[in-house]
Length: 380
Image 1: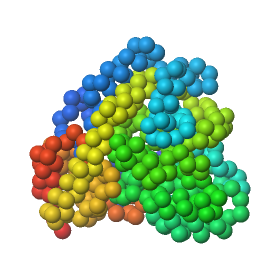
Image 2: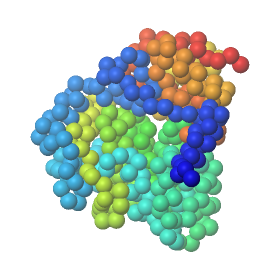
Image 3: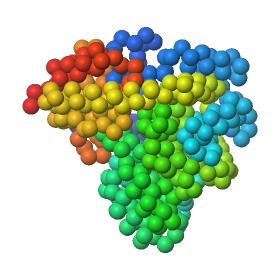
């Protein structure tokens, strides 16, 4: 009798192939061969000489790794420096750096809720928020996308501790959450508001200080925000920002902080370098938004269906998952890298090309990218 405990994987693979949902890794070379409209490098800082130098200097001084969890040996003076500067830049009392934005969302959701509490989550929230809700052991209510009144009503029906959570900018279509209205709903029901600002930091707010700052919510007693260092700051890692007592609570209770190795010094140094560069060059944030608006305007003028961007993400609808894959491949063959979003990454089941604006794109590059996307669009 043969022993084949993983034969079920073959059937799963066939189903993915039949649905046009096979995903593959595509290692890229060190030197870019394509015009990049697929990454999240919104400010064009990943390869900036100052950012690279800051990463290298941190590695030379502190070593290649953090050596342990933050509560054992993994906290350096550099980590503390980044936390102070992040909190100050974004307008919050304190910050806590973790190994990824994913870990930051899991930390905040699991440490600030629990059995007997309620999480009210937007239907369009990122997978890291969905997973944080699942791990929290709290009751989770998923409400319609960008609907503050639905949030208020759901919170009102729960007598105990509660929290609403939303992306500031939704990663699929690039639309912004109605943060001020959501904050009003939470205040009315004595609930906390957790904002994932992964796609807002560096793009929205005065000089890129983020969506909570733009909405006048930064530093509020009931406001906590998470963010990633891997998008606008061109590095790696994540952080939770909020009142000092919230951050102290996470240090003592958040499992993805306590039991995870600290962020590598090179990534901390790169993030600090980017943050300081952004302070000196705040116009980069406005330029990223200008590029996104230009992409949207030229794409729609050419007859394509796109979603008006509120930050740096431009979403272009495709006819099907297969059509989106073919379209992205044809763009790549023509020298343009674009994102391809298909189920289950899209909450509404509609496949898309996802273009990301970068502050360092020239007007000529924008026009060329639009021409390629238009020329390669599948018929129909």
